[in-house]
Image (tube, rainbow, N blue to C red):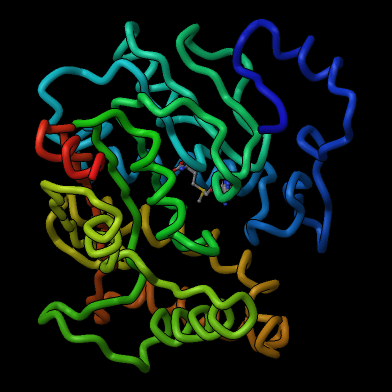
Length: 321
Ligand SMILES: C[S@@+](CC[C@H](N)C(=O)[O-])C[C@H]1O[C@@H](n2cnc3c(N)ncnc32)[C@H](O)[C@@H]1O
């Protein structure tokens, strides 16, 4: 952990930091601003434009989920909650507002969360891929739109289960950007899929990372020891082509979001030799696709959740053997 904010002692903590951890600094490159703490860990910017994109994404996701912050079937509202890779912290803040008796801790590489937040919400600059120093009695751990950026999502999910209390829940939500046609088939030649193919090779060849990983999260959770694992998926159109007003609205917002996201890929695509000019052409093809009402494709929003098993007498016996 590098620093804490979101509470009244934020200023004190910042000014009393003796080490320059980079937690409260930023780096600039190519006109965009990036996180400085654990420099280079996350490839997307953290500037105003990216923060607006994140806010738009939050609005879209809340629309898709009928304004529910989570789908895990907890019988009681959670008391102790952690939000991994919280970004600008909107999910954590809304959890704090809706559940005033709960405490919510949001972690991120960037100190981009507001300082005026509900009293039960705290933010820390932290790399969730470091060894966790957090307590191990969380009721609920949540991660949204972040697994594709981790070097090892399975390792993060192992930290999650180790820090939940028995019976506690984990929920992971994320877009799967590979575009499906209405009949569920995937055309590798459509621009979004060509873009995804490039992003996958870049992540695999330079960082040894596998993206997209979203459809496999359930299996990763099962291997980590979770039970009662469930998946819910929502198809979201690329573009405002549907006649149904709700689908049309979601499609329009998704494509605006994707248009903002595409230019942040220059750096990653550069790893596999795609020049900024070539990337520009690819992005323009994607944007043309979003605006072409005769191309009917969907992204898929995934919600995965699962429970850490209760400690039973027999499992206690087993661990003592
Ligand atoms: C696309 S944003 C999503 C933010 C937020 N979860 C949401 O849904 O609005 C991804 C966030 O993950 C954070 N992130 C990426 N890798 C991280 C890591 N290893 N530790 C902590 N945060 C990380 C980034 O800084 C960024 O804020």
